[in-house]
Image (tube, rainbow, N blue to C red; front, side, top):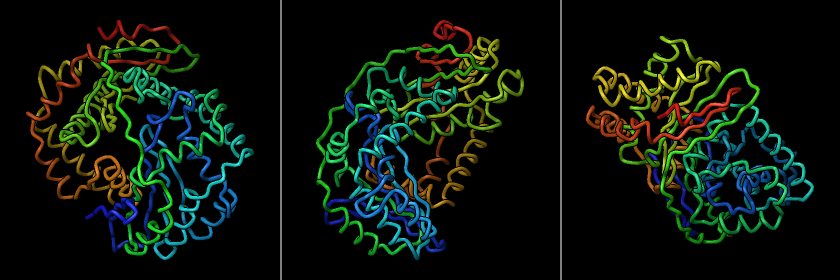
Length: 415
């Protein structure tokens, strides 16, 4: 069972002790992502994540890598729309030394101008990589239309122009504003000494500012929107989405189960209809995205250029069938078992557990027990499924994006 402990300095630590493993994963979560960025510095959250690995007052970038390797540990980081996480996975016997390196990066990264110049080029290549991967690019485009004029529409990577404008002073100012004790959670999962971990972070991170200024959330009335790109590619990529549930909503497990029925597995309706029966797509699936104050349900497909219209029609057919006929008790039971299986499998990895615990602590200031999750999944009824299905079956509410060799009016296909 995981718990949240608040240290004297105000820092929250999510702790999950697992005695039967010989390692632990530690993540420093910061509630700062592209939703927190000003127009003048798009991509700065992600760029700072990169720069944290480029040298501190006592370690060069090479030394950080070498010191981690010498301890048999692994280190990495990621930036999302609303948060940044720096994490290490280490042998329990080397955890304290490994955490010292992670803390050093947060506390004393130098952001040398020459390193910034090199890393800007690296991120620009990352931007190109996404643009050269239509399946990724079309999903980024979906955020832009689903959350038009809202912070969630911002690109995590920024643009080449916004990267060029970021200065060392911008970085220092952003960190001072966003990396505050009330805006950070340390998540620890595995075999560790609780008192040692808490004392280490209490001592080493207490220099941070206590609190972050409260931001106002901009409410924008949602209206369906569409976007397309014409590119010389071999396959068309379609993404359709509609607003749905925010993170940790009381109906989250119902949505997970419904998503699994519709397009989350090989036995799902979209996969069986569009790929197996009609042979129109190699890739077709649905997924959900959940954020602090909003969320969405989306359907993605990669199809031949001449199958776009048929594929969109088949998606509409499945959504209409869901609205008209609902789901069967057999589908519900299979999806519950798959959902429980995915959840239990994820618990066998301390890094996965660190991520889940950290995210819940950061955004909801609470933790979940295994028993609570299983009970919530088991309690989902067909009536619950149909209540949530109302959020995703009205095709007039869908936004959409497409990248294709053809110039397609996706809005017209969804009418």
